Image (cartoon, rainbow, N blue to C red; front, side, top):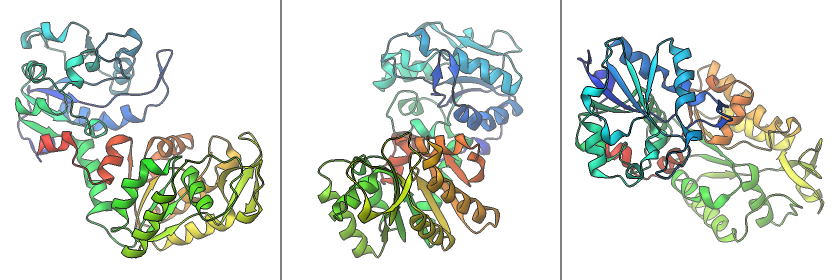
Length: 392
C-alpha cells in the first residue's frame, strides 16, 4: 500500500482527501472534536507540500437527500480556526462541478465538497460517480480508516481512476492494529466490554488463538455470570447467549487463552445510585450491576502488570455516573503507568471507550486510540476491509 508520506512531488497537485468528519452535532455545535483533531497531521503535511486539498466527508445518514442540519459547514468553521486558514465550502451539485471550477482564486488551498452522502450514488458505490469525483483531482488519499469497512464510491471505486494513497492517520491505525493482531509482543491481553456479547463474538473468536487473556466486563459479563449460575438481578443482559458463551469457553480452553470475568461487582437499585460492592452470590433481585468490584479490579491490574500488549474495547461499568467509573479508571491508571515506563503497547478503541477517555481528557495517554467503530471491530474479526483492499 502506497503511503502519501512517500510521495515526493505534491507541489500544486490537487489531492482528493477522504476523511471521516462524522462528528456528533447538537444545534449546529460540535460535541466531540476527536475526529477533527486526528486529521490535522495529514492537512498540515499536505499544506507543507503546497498541495491543493479537496476534502470529501460525510455527516450522519441523509440517505441521498440534502439535509441542511447535516451540512459540513460547522466542521469547516472549526477546522478554519484550528489551522488558521480560510476554507471554502462548495455546495454546488457535484455533477455540475468541473476541475476548472475549483481553486480559481490562487490563494485557495483547501476546499470542502458538501456532505458526500447527500448523493445516493455514494453508498451505491456508483462507478460513474467515482469517475466524476476523480476528474476533479490528480490523486486520491484515504485517511478515513473508520469508513473503510464501507464499499462506498469515495472509499472504494474512486481508486480505479486516480493514483491512490493511504493517509497518515489510516497508516497509523493499521500499524497499531497490526501490532496487537499479527506483530504481537506477548503476553497480550484484551479487555472487552459492551452490552451485547453477540455483537463481539466474532472478535472474541478471532482473538482467542492470538491472545493470552481476554477480560470480559460491562453488560457482556452479566451474561457470563448468569450462565455460571449467579443472580444478576435487574442488570442489563442479552437473551439466548448460552451457546455463544459455551463456544467461548470451549475455544479458549483449546487455545490456552484465559477468559476472565468479574469476581465481585458494584451494584445499585438504579443508575443514579451510589453503589455498594457485593460478592457474586449476594446480588438481590432488585439490584443492577453497574461496575466491577475491588477484587475484580485488583485481578485485572495484576494481569495488565504482566502484559506487554493490551487492547481495550469497552468500559468496565456505567462510567457516566462517577460512582461506577472506578473500574474503568483503575484500568486506565495501570495502563498509563506501564505506558510511562514504556513496558506496554496499548490500543483503545470503540465509541464508549473513547467517550470515557475523553470525559477525563486522557485520550493521549495510549499508544493509539481508534475513533473507528465498525471498521475497528471488523478488522479485529479478521475481515478484509473494502477501503484497504482498494488501496492495495
